[in-house]
Amino acid sequence: MKQTFQMECMEHLLKWEKKINWPTHDDIIKHPLITQFMREILIDWLVDIHKHFHLHEESLYWTVHIIDLFMVSPQAQTISQEKYQLIGCTAIWLASKMEDEYMIDAKHLVNMSRNSFTILDVLQMEEQMIQYLDYQLPFVSVYQMIYELFIIQSAPKMVHCATIYISQLALCKANMCSYIPSVQAVACIMLGYWLVYHRSNEFQEIKTFQALLDKFPLLNKYVDPCVLLPCLKCLYAILTINKQTLNCLPYPPRPMKRFAVRRKFSKDNWCNVSKIPHVQLLE
Image 1 (tube, rainbow, N blue to C red):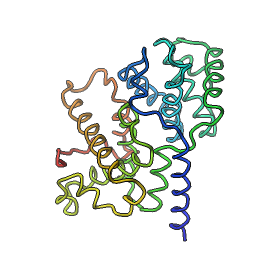
Image 2: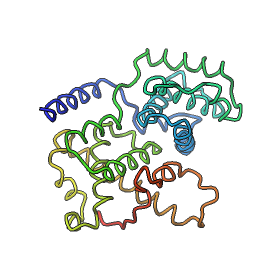
Image 3: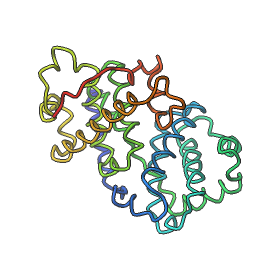
């Protein structure tokens, strides 16, 4: 009965997902002043802010969704690079109001930005953002999809941690905006299992992405396999490139810039999943 109820919840989320006009990768790169590299730096910094204030995990996903939805709006096309950090802080402030028992105090965000803006700037930007969004903030996130899918198909804690790790690596990459949350969630779960168990007897025979897809028939039914396969390949590239890039840095990395997600998931409370050694097996 519990699984049936969760399947109904998942179907409800899938319906909501279709109602949202998700920005694509092409939409994001069209901005005349804000580059993909700047977006990656901002989100990496927000991961540290999110961790510093001990916010709910889903707040981070809402933050990125709000930023992307607003940045493709006509009002945001003239936003200068100096205001981009303000947009990120306002988005995480809004997200904390939605998800957390205690929202962030705006003055703390001002301090964290080294007084790059004022509290009044945050309030004015908040009004501008929610007016464009017509007070209809996104009600579906990758994290929410993952949560529901793990209730339908239970998994060990380490797999759960690996899945969240991969999904948060994906938040930083603009090209992942080409895939809606449900597709990303299913692909993250599959790759999370692979990351944890790729050396086990059960997974050693999996050498291709298609074989990995075939391993999870229960998850496949929620998304189009034709879209899922390229999403899985993109996530795998993000995971392996992230690992390779880190390995090329001097040890210890000083400072470890743009690796906030990796630092976060190297801790015991996340089962040290960012430290799991892996080789490129899939093709």
